[in-house]
Image (tube, rainbow, N blue to C red; front, side):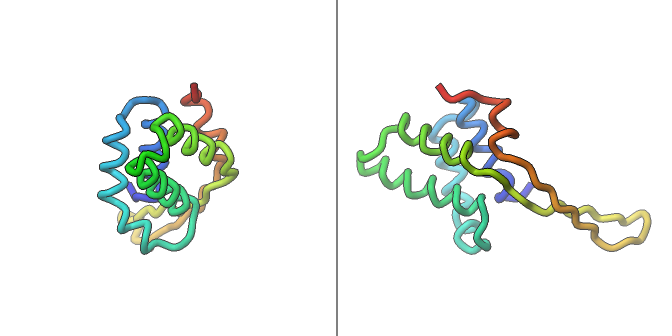
Amino acid sequence: MEPQIDIFVKVNQYLDKKISFQELEDWIVDHLFYFIYSPNNTAKDLAGIIELSLAEMSNGHLSEEEFRERIHNFIMHTSTIIYNLSNQWADSGMSSHVTHLSYSIGEAVSSSFEYK
């Protein structure tokens, strides 16, 4: 997958408590270069919020519970994400086909976790 999609998967796993804070932080650190150089989009905004929140946490200005709440609120208040899915049609000899997919973040993730 692509980091711009994976970040939402990782955040969802973190909010569902399927991965630890450390696992989320390690993933973000490993992929931060991608978001720094990517065009502005919701995934980049989320990565930026996470990065700044990690800095606040390391300085003792933000607890993990506050971090979790901040990330949850961002996800729930982000109305739409749009991304491209590319498929290769090698069998038919057709060139790459791009489909635009749009969905509500809040609707997509709210069914899989509840913030407590």
